[in-house]
Length: 57
Image (cartoon, rainbow, N blue to C red; front, side, top):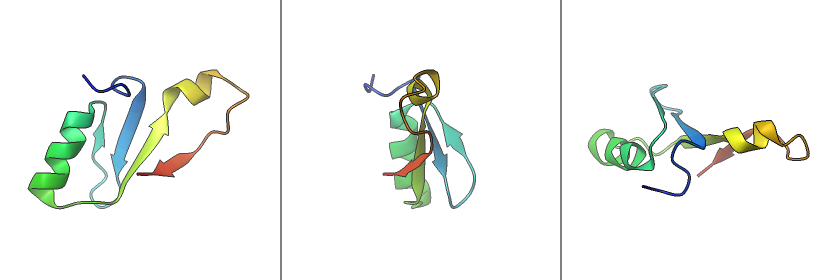
């Protein structure tokens, strides 16, 4: 299990698919060739001191 699993939601900017497991993101990149993956940190939502937003990985 990846350290961000179930803590982060990843979104594919090319097809709109979302993922909760990093291994699924890696599989998607390999199979579909999509590289525009953004992540939304759910932990940031719970901590109001952290800036919310999308981060390109």
